[in-house]
Length: 382
Image (cartoon, rainbow, N blue to C red; front, side, top):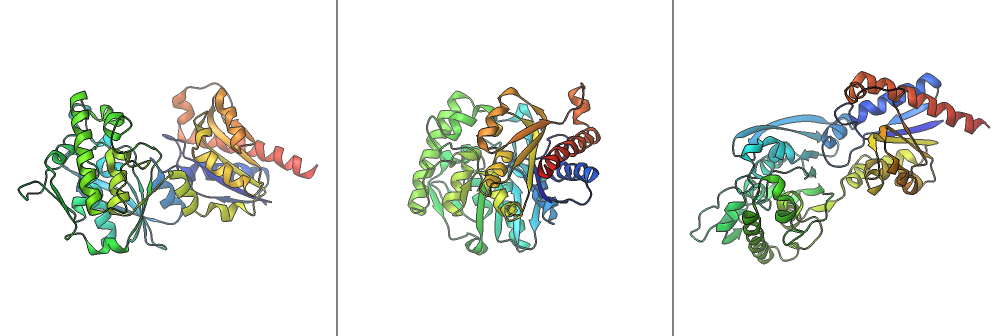
């Protein structure tokens, strides 16, 4: 019998691979002869780098870059050496969590450090990039990142514009003559799970500006500046500058920068992870697929990682079971998205803190996986 396990992380408790190994241990307790393959799973957001690096034999890297407020920060990213792929979370260089609440103001936060991470990875031989672009503190349209990669953004006097969204108020000209030549050899896939466009009522300034510290007045200003920036970008990159394309407003317009200047693809994060980990190749020969996450609910059914696994499994008519730290009543919607049955792993009353203790979560996962497998095994033999 062959079982494939692809668990999303139990945030704050177990990583994707740790959760998967716990499931494997539980199945081994029931029948050590069973072949269990554990594969990494993530949705492109927090934990994606860890999942891919730990699950695919990658190498951790650290580089000191310009943080969102201009002060140095240490950003971790990963390299998958077999494919020369860098796996980056932009939040490690320009994330909202790097900015104290009292200092949050997108007028002054920059994505420059994201470009420095890309530059560092290129210097180490990477030419493929998987970039998670959620959780940003910025609204600079990705201009900071592009400046770090050699693009020129100048005011009417020919001076480089300052960092942050307020720099866009001075933007008069964009140049490409200083761009790093290695970029022409690079492929970018940006994990983007929002559909916001660059400008307007559904644009990045209006929708995400408030959580980054923007006032109603600055939101209107930033939206106008981004509109002007997009017009200049369309003159420079007419084939790829599409500010009304879904996802261009992701991460304060960073999605627009990737698509326009780096010819990057904006894709759902889980789709990128499933493809890059070649999960379908393992599922083809599986008798059972086990997935799950910390909380299974109605949001899971709307395209989160476990449903991505389930839909992939259903292409090959495989049964799918999900295990979760907790399950809400609306999780039944997951049944229409390919998850045949789901099980909460808690065996008795306990506090949230107790349930999230890694050793407790590991033991609960193993115990539940053992019982689920025993039930499945019974069905196979009858």
